[in-house]
Image (cartoon, rainbow, N blue to C red):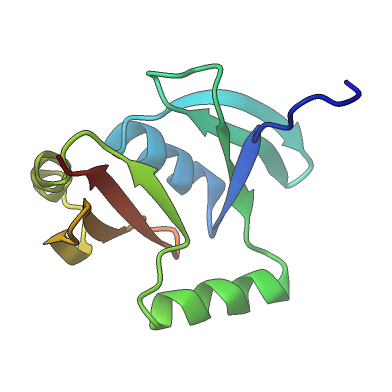
Length: 134
């Protein structure tokens, strides 16, 4: 692919338990499982958006490396989301997820050109959702 354009194929989220993460990311957030390949104690486990099943895959990656645990704890302690998901309407998603028991650390916030909110993914991460305004 000389001179070709690179594209993002996979992005990782470090999780404390792959089974719990899969249940949350599919059952609560609405992603669908794309790949699950057992690799010893863990799996190569990915989910995708049902709206773009051939798009970017989110790897639910074990956080067992000591640096991964320190990184996650430091971000969460400072209230920093590890990644961002785009939604059509932050308020609608906030209501839907809150009704399912999801804990938000930041309710919908009008940030001028976007609306954002931040929730706890139950796996040690804060996730931001964002919708463009206008």
